[in-house]
Structure formats: C-alpha cells, structure tokens
Image (cartoon, rainbow, N blue to C red; front, top):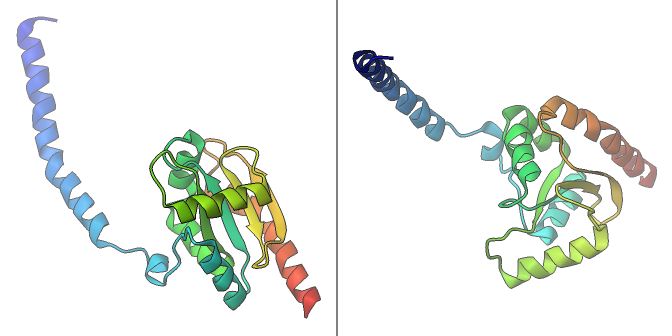
Length: 176
C-alpha cells in the first residue's frame, strides 16, 4: 500500500471516529440518566446477610446467594454482565428472590463482611465460583448450581432457577 493510500485510510478512519463520537456521548449520557425501574423499587444486592434474612422473612421470598469473586473470577464477571445486569433479570429478581452477594474479592473488605462470608462459606460449602444457592430465611438450602457458561444468558439462567423456586413455594405452602 502506498503512503498516500495509507494517509487517506487514516483520514477516513479519523473522520468516521469524529462523526460517531457525539452519538456515542449522547447514548452514554442517556444511559447514565436512565435509572432501572426495579432498582428504584429498592431491589438491590446486599452484602448484609442479616438484612437479606429479614427481607426474606418479610416477603416470603427465598434468598439468592451469589458466591462470587467479583474482581478476579472471569465467569463471575461474565454472569454479572450477561445476566444480573439485564433488565429482564432485574424484573424477574424483584418478583422472586432477595439478592445477597457473598463476595470474596481481592480488594479490601471490612472485618465484619469477611467474618460473615467465611461463616457462609463454611455453611454452604461452595466448590467454586460462581456458585448460586437459594436458601430460606432460616438458612435451609433449597437448591444450587456451580459455574457459569459463557453465553448462557438470562433465559437459561431463569429456566434453571424455576424448579428450585417451585420447591421453595411448595415448602412454604406445606408449612401453613
């Protein structure tokens, strides 16, 4: 490729970049301003297990425990991006579970969180990360799975959770 052709290609690439950058900034600004409906209703992840238990008792919903290494586990990061950050999943979660994150990051945590998570790790014994555990407010395990396959996505994730949640409803009905 001759030097003039390289210059023209570079110029065209730069012009294209400059043309789309205002659009990209507009989209980014709109995304920052938009707040997901379900987060506005208070459905957020907590790292306080006692708070998750209290919410579970109040609502009757099982606790979804996400055993994760949020800043070092590649499959944990992918699951968060491909499932937990989607609007479809957030809407599903509001109706079905209380969200609790048992995080084992490399970044610093408070001693209280470390102690709490160590106790949960001893109780539920996840074999790897991520591990999803559904539990009642009193800590009874309803079901679990370990791992996340790239591209699994929301629909398959919810499909996997559905029989576990049906078991939870059945158990709650039997107690009444």
